[in-house]
Length: 355
Image 1 (cartoon, rainbow, N blue to C red):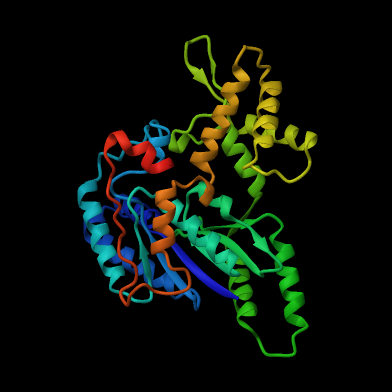
Image 2 (cartoon, one colour):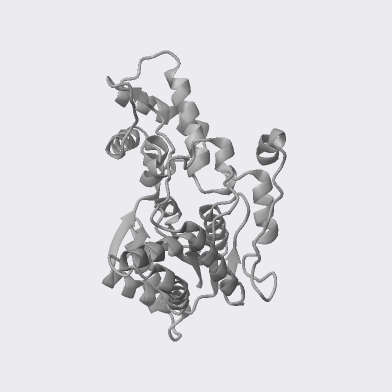
């Protein structure tokens, strides 16, 4: 079994910034703490590949699809973010000098896009992925496959309140892999070692099982407040404000959907869009003319914004990923350099992204 460590660099940065800000040692300790974090994570296990992933500095492609994307985020004004991001650039230079760590930052791509691309390609090759992140969007990548013998887990790496997120029914994977290992006539393999490593972490941290299907469904229907992605149905209240479908409401809709259509959900299909919109309309008692069309359009919008697969990446961006992210090998001895994409003229941006 091959294994990859994938570090969400922006998560690591913000975790350390807020820890040190509370301790009033931010300017003194930030660089050292980030480097120590990377060293510690690198030494957790004998990884086959280590990736350090960063968000684009110039913007995200999703803003061209939905202008309100991440529009409500406000930085903490008590923190000197210009200095923080310069320190982050210094850290990236440090990482770049380490041949054992592959650094990736691609214009217009979020770190989540790059992480998903790596995970999906690694899984095709039978690689397991140990992801350091806190973003719930990444949880949709939690899965295992018995025939290819891989599993993806997320470690919410903190000084306190450590958590590990695992795919639903992960014990099936552990049991089958152990059964397979016990039938071997040979000594302990890499598969055994990785299972022992995972079990040790699971036994000492809070472990949370995630249903990939339920997570995706409820996100698509309820939206994502953190990223300012609205729910698929909005209703005006008596005070004039719009109220969407909350987390509990989205779970209720999912439960009814599965009672009606118990087969595994193909989120990419038109059939799903129709059935999901009908279920939303039934639960929310929608009667207005044209509302079904609006709900279906919103489901398609949220699908593009929230599902992390190559299908919804802009074609130009996917081409850059294919050209520059060499799964299983280095591009050069210094790891990956940041990849810049020329920004198209404003009048051509939709054609450039989506043609």
